[in-house]
Structures are given as structure tokens and as C-alpha cells.
Image (cartoon, rainbow, N blue to C red; front, side, top):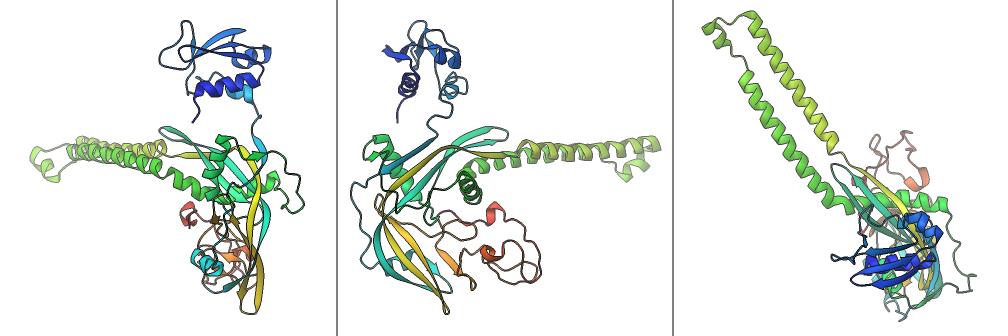
Length: 392
């Protein structure tokens, strides 16, 4: 991974500044007017990045204020890139392809046939989201989502080799000049709709360690509140026998009862405050988009259900040598087990093919949406816990 010093030098150079290395771990910068205004630095400045700084240098660190406004200087540059990637070694699909696909995908009420395998080109869309979670503490992370624009299949296996090839900076160029057999690029609205459906289970999976730690701290604080207020209640609790023995007056009895009420109200108020303190808000914001065009082996498949058939295709990626799992036609998440609907032969994951909780009728969410065709009840949106695991 490149150092902060190298990244800063590249950004300043692209913005028109003159940059020269200074020992130890520093940069000497002569900045034009645009850079000076964006970063609030003089025309000549000395920046330091290590534990030991050059004399008079300004420290730069990986903190919200430490990179002194590089984001303001970059603005929207570098947010979108389209490129062609030529596979180094053209991986070939397995010989017994039909049996191999059967091990990857299970159709509970249908079958499939492999018609042919042809070379093709497709577009992959790599979306990078900046994930921010705010609770009693703040956490930030990056999460990537890669999708094949031709059949909506999620291509997680593409992320690591693609980022590696980008870091190496070889094997790609910006122009291919043969768009005739490529699928049409997605619009911004379609990218937003797709991300809204597919991203929540991935965010939950990424935040699982963070949320588990937060729940442990909340349970510990709730236990402390319970112990503390239980002791207060035991100390203030009025005993009937004590009244007859000491001839406690009515005013004192009412005072003790009021104290018990106050302890109870304070206890529940503290519980509500603690739960609000540990409530988490997660926000995923699209940060970068990479549209990759490359070669694949296209596997043409026919789904067979009763007397109906539906042609589909799945791509075997030459770059990573893997077969992309087909997505659910309702929630768009990839999986291994599917149920095929009787109307249009949609592929449905187990959650999207589950029966209506009111009347028990099973129906296709891709055909009918959220309304049950028998009782016309609108089904509630599924929670994140109900969504299928992104890895199947």
C-alpha cells in the first residue's frame, strides 16, 4: 500500500504544484493559487509525514483535519473510471460444465440445461462505498460491491484481483473500441435502486463485530443500572412489620412510597437514555465507480419448469477463473438455492419464495411485489436479518 506521503505528492503534482522530497519524511511544496486556496497554505511550505519532522514542517496525518483539505482539492476528480482489462491468462471453464454448475446452484422445483458456451464481452461495475457508523463511538470503513451489468450477478471474486491489477497499473487501457456486443451501461438511477436492495446484508455482515462489541457494553451498563437501583429500592423499601414496631407516621409512610416511585421512574429513564446512547446509525455513501469491460466465457442456460422454459446466461470470468452465481430476481442477492416461480420462471431465494404470513399462500415477489394475491395484504419490508447471506 502506498504511503500518505506518496499519495499527497501525487495529488499536489496533478493540481499543478511543484513537489520535492525533503528528509526526513517530508515534502517541499511550491503551490499555485488554486492549491493555496484549497489547502490554506502559503506559496512555499514544508510538510512532514513521519515521527521525526523536518525543521519548521507542518505535520500531515490520517485524521479528519490532518490531511488539511486534500478532499477539497480533489473534489469530484477520480470518482468515475471506465477501462478495458485484458485477462493475462484466459482461464477456461470446466469440461463437465453442467455437472459443475449443478454443484454451484440448486433449483428445488426445476431443472436446467446448458445450451452452449461462447466467448463474449461484458461490463462489471465496481462500486466503492464509504461506510460511516455513529453510536457511542464512530467507525468508518470502505465496502465494495461488484456486479455484472449483463445479468445482475454479483461478482465478489472480481474485487480482489481487480484492485490488485489497478494497483500494479498494467494490463489495462481506457479505450477498447468494440462496444457492439457489450450490454448497455446502467444509469445512475438504476445503480441507486440496485445498491438499495443488495447493500444492507453486506453492511450488516461488515458491522457484525462492531455491533457485537457495542451490545456487550450496553448489557454491562444496563446490569450496573439494575444493581444500583435494586440496592436503592431495598434500602428504601417499607416493611409493614416496621410500622407497628416503631409507630411510623402516615406522612413518613407516604414519603417512603414516593421515594420508591422516584427510584422506579429514574431507573426506567436511565434505561431509555442508555439505549439511546448505544443506538447506531449507519450511512453508506457512494464514493467511487469503476466500469470495467473485459472478456468472459458466456454460459447459455435454459431453466425448465413443467412445460415452460426460460433462457438465461451466466458468465465464467477469465480474470479470476470463477463462475458467477445467479441473483434472486426479487432481492437481487446471490445465493445457491432457488425456487422457480410458475408464472415467469423467476429465480427466488428462500426468503422471497416464503408464504404470506397472513393466509399462508406462496407467491412470487418478483411478479406480485409486496401484495399477496389472495388476501391483498401488503407485506412489510424484510428486515436485514431476513435477507440472505451475500455469500449464499
